[in-house]
Image (cartoon, rainbow, N blue to C red):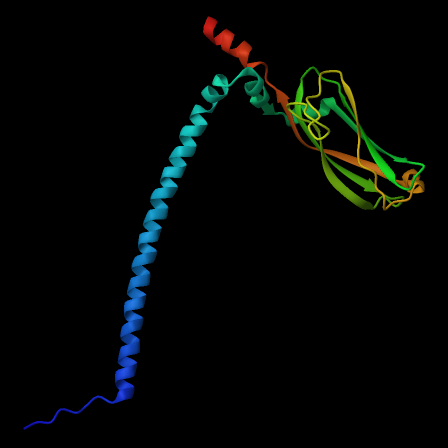
Amino acid sequence: METRARMSPITALFIGIFGVGAVAIAAGTATVLYGMRIVDHKASALIRFADDTLEGLPELIASLPPALGDMLNDRRAPEYASQIDVKVRFVGEDSDGVRPVLTIANRGDEVVSLLAVRVAALNEQEIPIRDWTEVVATPIAVDDEWRGPLMPGATRHVVLSRWRSSPSSAAQSLQGAVEISDIRVWEGSTAAQRTSDDRA
């Protein structure tokens, strides 16, 4: 009669650990593969949705009320930046503080629906000490932050918040550098476009 050797507890422990590990790896792999499949399907659906949305965007804009449609009816126009003059100066006030003032002139014949400028304040050695972005024209006028479109031939003065950390005497030594960072021009009334399309 043959006697079968009994498995030691340590061997049984290792076999159990490796068995559980193999099952966990297999389950994790299956979960990852299933997740990748779901993500692939969702990504494809999202891409199709984006394509359909972009294709239908002109019709969507045309169907909006004129007040909303006109606001979205513009285009980026970097070539029009040559028609815009932007200057910045720094005004010292009686109370401590320096106030930046922007002057923007539209010398062209287009309505600027969006104009963002990057402004830098330079010291006497022309070293930048502050810089920020300011939106000086927006599609509609609502409050101080939404200043409205800039009409052809118009000049706009934008008075910014006072720098309380700078003494008023510092205004004389500051210089300004301005860069147009984004510009969009109005394409015309969507109502007028709808009328011309109906006539065609």
